[in-house]
Image (cartoon, rainbow over all chains, first blue to last red):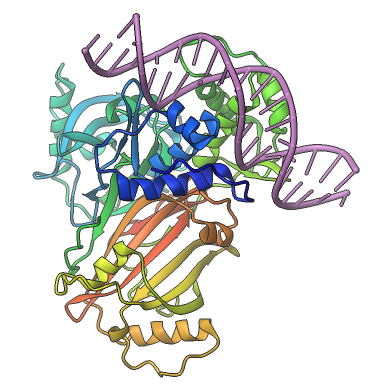
Length: 254
Length: 254
DNA sequence: TAGTGGTCTAGACCACGCT
DNA sequence: GCGTGGTCTAGACCACTAA
């Protein structure tokens, strides 16, 4: 890694810095290697620590670096591809998916979700009714890559035993099992950028506010939206893949 | 908007601030409305400007705010849904899509793209050969929402007139038209988080480093990857939608 | 030219992971 | 306890937009 001072250019210092660091990462570091600490890097490049941090933040956003408080900054491995394609799942909790059911409770969903579940049929002004909320975690290679909340209309799972197991996870699995009995008429997904809430951050082993890819799935059955799943994927470590029929296997990215 | 001082809590100030501002945005501001400037907001909440900015950055990342240098901070409209589903396109440039072709040139692609286009058939050590690179822009409601580079194998468009029009846009359209003659065998998409390069930023009317959703599409024809498209969508204003067969129309999000 | 957000500095202290 | 990254401050100047 060079020690050259940055010149005064119309380009922001942190941008220049990011480029220099990025190239150094490619040529002089290997995955998992630990970088010098921020104070030293800042001194080496002749900038304030805040400026250096601005560059590191960008590189972390791009999945090039991983920073952990109390530990240090390391070179991140390539992003893992996680399949979220239409063929990957039918109903949530279908056998073979790599989600684990954590918990389940009756709760009032966020307004946006309530609107989806209510559909056009009921434009009434009643307060949003509670729905069954199942919490799941997606694991890949032993590490959590996503958290998810599945909001299920109660009338979509009428066969649920009316006992309420103390074990939320067992209840969650029962809910998803019942849901899976319905014929799935279609699903529709959206992807957008968000930031991790306090609970998601804890589950994903990140700080609150960490960037996440929010994947919202609407499950249609019986002519309406029976369930809505909101999954938050770690944006720094994940690459979402949507495989299509007939598509060739992608070459491994470097 | 309240003027109450923030208490000293174990929660970071900027996080608290973000919550307070977010609620104020919901209840006391309407879309397009301009907020007080950063110096005044910081004073009002009793924090340093840098701390206030940290909160604003998060809200901008979530698509709640829009900040423009020399102008001010305004309340952002809801994100626009842009369709990138499998049914949305066949080949790039198919009639009816809302992309406009800007330019085309012969250039050496990034290493990752070159690897995709080379495929497994040629694991040789030759330098990456130049490919046809078409630049496009996607417009929605009069505003650019995405930029894209389509990398096309030259041997996938043999019918191209060997004249090279001075007009790059015309050449680009010709390339895509030729490409569209091939039977499309499949496509495969990935979505990940990135940051806008200098040129993308200019086209998207954003600053360099702005967060973008990078959509990479691999087009298969004749048993191999004939083209790779790398599109960068404005993460602050876009919600990518992947519509499936049989899916109901989503309710408009608030 | 005035006012905005964007960049940058040189400090300080805190929360966390290790040993 | 020590070293790490995370938060925060109080300034300064710059780049841009619009009147």
